[in-house]
Image 1: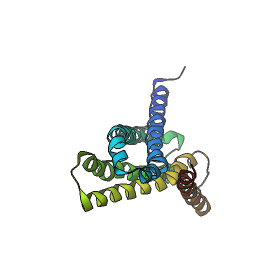
Image 2 (image 1 turned 135 degrees about the vertical axis):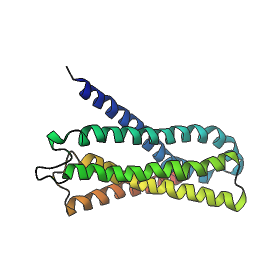
Image 3 (image 1 turned 90 degrees about the vertical axis):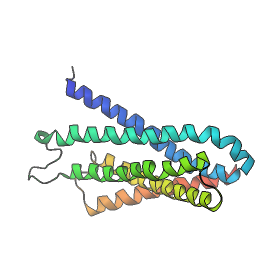
Image 4 (image 1 turned 120 degrees about the horizontal axis):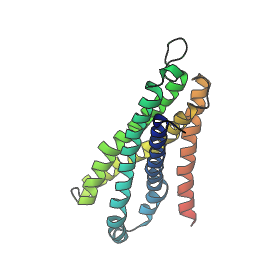
Length: 202
């Protein structure tokens, strides 16, 4: 039988993964599906579709980000900060372990993404949906939200790589970091490029 601490960790890990799927899934929907779609819609179609689509999608998007962020902090505290006897945060020499550095790299990128959602993307989208901005200001607000959404999309690949590398790479070497950056960014760039190719071919 698992003890209470193990069960608690499992439940928070499950919550973290479920919320992360919701958050990143909506991030990819916005960038890989919705951006090409919006470019193909005329103003009348946007007025018919977006008031029904965007509020609901943005609700799941931003709260998925918040729950992922909070549950991740709890897990880090439980597993790394509260497990010094197991050497997860510090190595045998008393330095911060490579595993902890990997996970903190992923956490740093995830925190930037969470901040962008709650303090840039969502405030901009709220102004757009409520009609607070018009004309040139509307175009600028949409551009700003789109830019930060695209930044988050690019960060998501390296962020996930950092989270997973904590359990698979024995050291935080220059080569591992290069792979971490190139594979993560390359995968996202390929997905974005493919989304526009598919959108043009259907």
